Length: 264
Image (cartoon, rainbow, N blue to C red; front, side):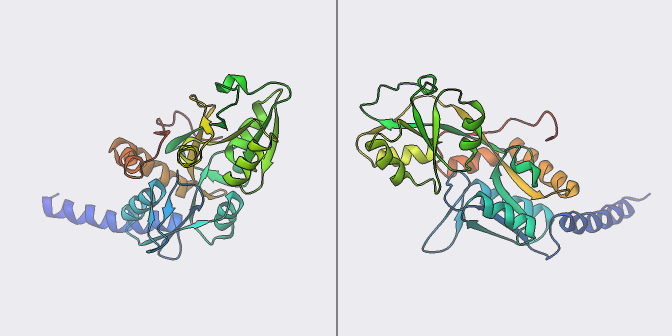
């Protein structure tokens, strides 16, 4: 076969493949993504321009580029809203921390980053490390249905949880000051920013959990999930994910290692 013939065959294959891959993820011609509006580890929205910046935005842009389609991305209020947007078809993909409970309703990609979680305490607190937390009589605040909530629910044996329905740090601070909780659990990036502007509090120096940030699709969309997993592998290998984390100025967020097995 001549070189020109090979080129035509390759071009035709590309024309057939890209629309097919795009159809696995969207039937509207536009890749629509959602993320947690209050989680800067995923992305933030500029209030003046509406521009979305952060790892979720950059990965969505890269996925759309590979599919050859435009994209939209918007923040929504809470994990339930991200999941519902994908389940209902209002969005094609969503950015969410992996948890087996959530995986009963949507399918998760491999991880693209790990958002380390730690505890916020008062300066005068005797708590010095995460190992000091799980003791009888200690109440720990946590955002209700956050990944940290699920993790601590499974792993704390002696301490008790006080769930914060909105994950509101101002509420958490009042609870700490009133001795209603001894520590508040959340991602290190968010707590670092809060502690920097809030006198009288500090973060514990270690982390209790690296939250597995991933991409969700509707249940059973194996073909679409394969496309996303391939993109995540390529973005990791090319340094795109690390660069996106650095550009966003995220603290305590690491590039996730390659998956060694499919999600169960």
